[in-house]
Length: 448
Image (cartoon, rainbow, N blue to C red; front, side, top):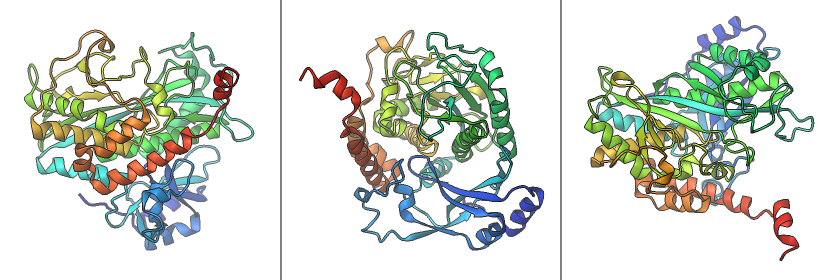
């Protein structure tokens, strides 16, 4: 599978069709799933298409605050060389929010880059393709909408007209979606303009929390759709003087935000390889591989300090590698349906995780199960939290050590990526955990 890049004619046609666009954000997505890149003027777009763009290789190994992390070994040791990028065909799209003066496009490395999360996912897709298997993937994302602070700092304050009481979550109701109707309309307007296959929107269980589902597509498109949906939601929020956050646990008493991934495999004829009665052997093996590899990839599912606050009992957030049929207390839920609809819903990741790496890790787990014919054991019934099972490392330090030493991760992602991702996140963890907070003072200062 090779990339196709935008042509000068495509860029010129876009400018002709969008006369109000004056700025174009040309973005890539780093290890954190964050958009990085350059903003170019309308008059400079054709030049960027013709000549490409250059960015330093370290752009992939920045921490969430934008710091270059020397501990990764990809800064001074390499000379931090430039990487040539080109704009991916079909990604130059308008952002029809606010004044409608902005557009965006996605750039990808011209040559293979071992630190590019998209390349990591491509590796898993290509390896499945050798066996005649194509993953079909859909992403579901939860997020909170809050007031925008005048000083630019994040504040967890629900917009006017929305409940701020966690005991009154308005789950699956419509009143709060009506209140934020103009914002939601803009999300869907942006998604339509950008070709994002958005499906349903629903009120979730936290104050000002919503979920938007994307329809299924191939794995590469699904992951890209996931990161672009985040940008669409944030752009719509800014246009209405709001803020949207995909933070995994913005408040300790409010429900967390997750990223659920639906996945199946089809053959060259489009037949679902997971379908079968009562269960296809390949389906069981895929589940087995996902269960066995789940602790190894926990540092992908939960990539930030905050993400680990989401793993609490009785929150529909799994803390062990259980699977089950139509059961929301398990990590791997088999939704109701059969035949072509047979699939796995992977429920472990926080909404702040990188969709490229999340999907790549899921596909790696499936491959691991198929290659080694792993049986998942008995499915869970009832409340899976009361059952014995392989616990997930829900402390960041433990998940990173598991990731660093995992042979499964090394085989799937390669030793260089495994090492650099570990060093990047270990440095972030140490920096975060060394900070003394007001809670330290409140709990311990006067009793010590």
